[in-house]
Image (cartoon, rainbow, N blue to C red; front, side, top):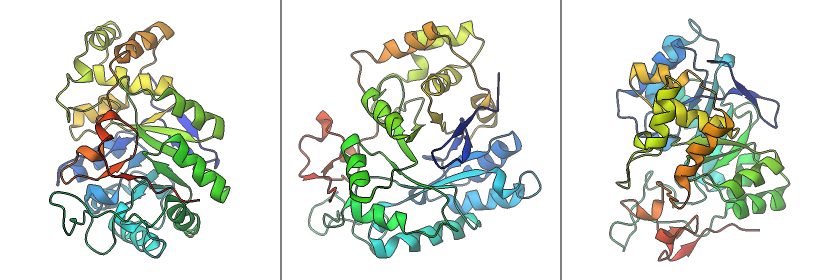
Length: 325
């Protein structure tokens, strides 16, 4: 079992294949989780403004830099939130993130979603006339926001990328600017392999980071860690089902960012397991005829009235993504 698998980005930067996710972590849990993770060898941390816990991450970093690690030994990703997609807002939010974390730069900064909200009304601005909906900014395009990302000072951001973007959305950014995202961070697990998107990213030299590698239980389906095929392989390898699902993502070349706040799980998730081709195929088979995307903002409360992925659940959305030219 190896803890040291590294991925090299198109920029030449190196990141650990297994990182720590911080989405859906409750307040007061994240500080402890980040400290435990770094003390146990994690060097890749995945963060975001919308998680509303970056100040806690910053508190943990003060406990481990420089006593446990140097800042340059960590690979830190954060994400530009929807309410700062406007070119005048992007660097302001970046500065806020750096201040919360107590660091001078990010290794990677991603556009969190291909969706803009109106600025200046909080992270989730309520729609002025439609109940339980957010107020979208339908004028700012993805290309506008990507140009704002490109313009960010290199002293503050070492690499830029996207998250939750489709092939056509990424193609439009490249066509308009000539700048290829270093990373596309996406929901990825055996029920959502996204083979076409993975092949496209590979062809363009875009690294894929997988969030929710264990799936989640937001839609009331059986948990991936309970699927018999996965449990069986885990038993045979003397591993946890979570380790097997992380290994599935690693087999596909992803970096993987499982979230946990429990010390034992943080440690075990980091113990990298290797799958045989047969094991990988057996795990992949659980997704056949069982396509499931857990994270669809059209289903959020409040709703985002926009069709991002073309999923059946989004068919009644009023708005397409404004890609721009």
